[in-house]
Image 1 (cartoon, rainbow, N blue to C red):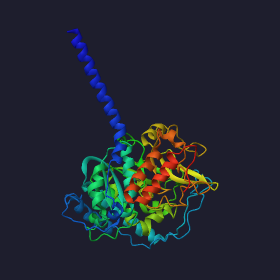
Image 2: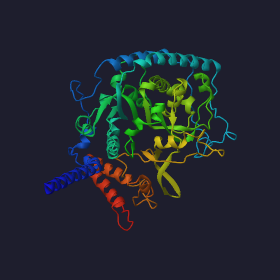
Image 3: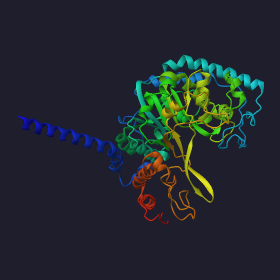
Image 4: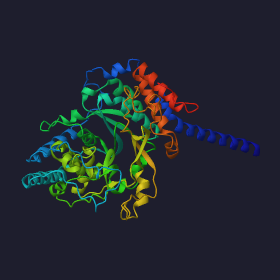
Length: 502
């Protein structure tokens, strides 16, 4: 009896150990193997670029399933037009913001006053203020009707047909990070629909195609949509209540789902990340919005490649963000950025929260840059952003993230996102001779991020990225596959430090 019990116990122990090891290896191996096992047709490039007739009867296409979002958008479009400013268009001019405001150091308020590049008349300011007040009132009334799936969480991305290869690389990296959130890829319209990508490839990554233009066009009164606004309307039209927007050339390093379950997201509902530069908003904006001027030393400007937003809390905020982008080219991009670097949607989120008297949290750990040296000059390849959970715990006990010497305060940091905005993941062109991945003599490839980040990330994320690029290149053409494979082997499988010649 005793021997039987012992054998049973040993057998049970071995089974438990086997299941544990199998689960361990599945968790760490599956996301990478999952990206390797996808086989696509040889004529992938032709299918990607060929015109395809969209079939609205195709049930696999993810179109609005009810009239709720269409009804809401039609009402919102009327509100946007009702709040159209009757003021002279602000010409941003050709002169960019002074280097004093866009260098890599904190602005010293004693030496650098608030920037003011525009002379807006009192009449125009009054007209803009009256229209702004109308939109605030409309947003408060309409916001409660914004439809979304209660409790849902997911990633929103935007793309045109040209950017689909880039998006596919980023989605592979999302899954390598062990992030299992569903992904909605919002294409400009059904003109960008690609059956193979939307119906065959994306579903394997728990991702789907949606179409901004097909919802937007339902409102006949709406003005034509411009390029910076697609991001905002994709977030607005998404069915997710809890949204994390990720640019087509951005991706997480670790699982980001836990961000939804802790502060600062649970406490603020709107989480943003910093850019390199100072705030360059005009004093005229604060007069128009009817709020106090924000000191230029209070925070850095915003880098909107990643945005987290809770529609349950911030529906009205999101509507004001949409307003600033709807009238961005004529008024608000100039008012909020004054022709500073990257002017566009990036500075519209925090002002919207301020005017609706809603909380927001911008990560206080400064942006890092991944890049390389060539010709005695540093070339940035990617922006690196930090974990807001770690950041929030590190700084919440401090009144300001600036010390007496105007330096950034941070006692703990953890890198979480890569935004490959410097060296774009343009799979079709990034391996051409003379491109920016060449070393000093411009005949050999090199690591665009350098070696030191391997230790900081805890693994070789750059290797994973270019393995994903290689997979996508090999689905596009034999020539691109050869170049991507040559680059990968020379840089990541090199021996004796030889990067390999072109």
